[in-house]
Image (cartoon, rainbow, N blue to C red; front, side, top):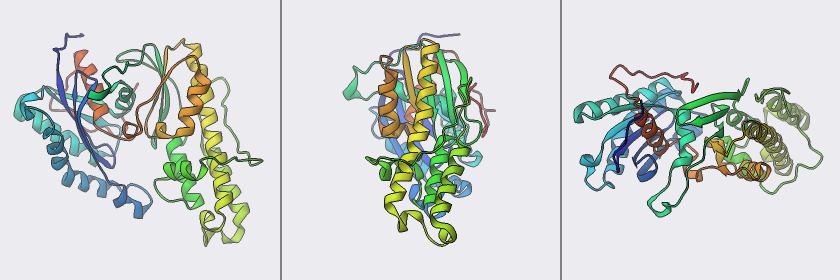
Length: 354
């Protein structure tokens, strides 16, 4: 049951679902009072991806300093906090448990409400956030169609209201962010792959180099495994026997840029066309672009241009990647709807949004 929220209701939020240790303080579900993220990219870069055990240990080392950093920016400190929220899934089990147990301990010791948040829901609510310098920012208008794109997820969701979700489509294999990372590795571009791919593809015309698009007609689903395999075949044809010994990005940077542009063009095309089609079918008043891949400039620009006159809402780049501010925003609306967890809440690595 929905409840009237007092003005100035302030939430301390924690996010530790993968390799970012984050804390934030959110007021009235929208205003970012304080935000801090400790990235582990440099630690995992040598491995070419996130190592779960390493990530979990680093969260333990970092979480207290990160929380102290945001609380130091809040007038009144702990006395200003009305509730505590954390991500409980989906994500890495060990990483999630660090945030969950920390949030439980804080909430129990201070007799505060404890709110668990779905990480994907958090990404959606990043588009509700603003800073004190941008109080005029308008929240997305319902109904919305949200395209959630990240390293682990690609989904299209209809939002009729807060908490009222319907899954329209999803990937049948690789998430688009995962495909970006794997293709970047195939071409020798390094980790994380998404930003590297966008960097080398920027301003490059793929020309005659065309890659397949899996349209999966009659659905709002996606498939990126075939596109990934197509890139592998192109690289194999280009390098032949040298493929196991050299990196395409080092021996042929110009062709690498062209191939990256072709991959990005294919991935963005299917994401945009299906999202806009769904928004028009369901008469959406807003399209929300959410998740780490929402930082991709080509995706932002093409979706905004294709969706007109439907407005496209997406957060600033620093709110696209994992952060606790989005968790605090989602938690506010969950608590407003009467949702509150008890101490039995556990990590749910494969948690579904719907």
